[in-house]
Length: 279
Image (cartoon, rainbow, N blue to C red):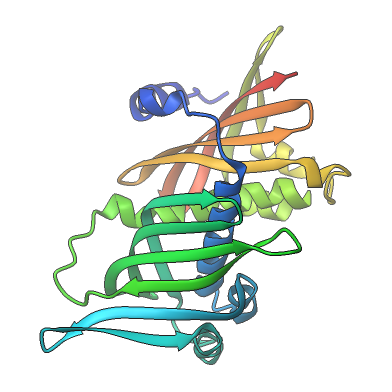
């Protein structure tokens, strides 16, 4: 049995203040899901996925300066989506975000964030985004307007900040595995050596990620509409990261603490510890 080295990493990397995370506003996580789905689609050059996050008539406004004078350039999001579609086969549109702030009031939401944009592996530019979203009649949040700033030179980017989107992408495969019941999503999230650890009245329990993936039911749970999941926080230091995930299910809440390492250029969960709170 491998030594559960997660104990040391959790102790040293998890900030105490974050360990007492306040009660969440579910709408904020729904809004974040829309934003991350858009960026997932951009990295995959999946124009249809990106288009699904926008309301009809949504507009992209880009601000900058030219010859010392500020300007704003407006483009229908349909044009942005079409440009992405034409870019299929080229380098990924890899936009990485951090310092995300979301404010929700009734059926409107605003999100601010910093970003760095990469064309494949090549850095292109940095700046800030602001999203405006509205909840529609079907209950779904969609972006009604997006604005950005674009800086081509002088970008001072913390590499840990630039990695946050990629860490969250790995964690989102884990969440999608729970939502769909498909082990293939979990397989993309876990490294093959990963283990799961938890404690019961009988003491420490362990399970391999291979066994966990093999146990996937292959379908969504009957009460999936009542289940909610979100990433509480991510903390990164170089090639190591830890994260907290909450799975809020009817009658039961799971608190997952994930360890991830960047292995061969890809973030993978290498260990998971969790607690179960039954109502």
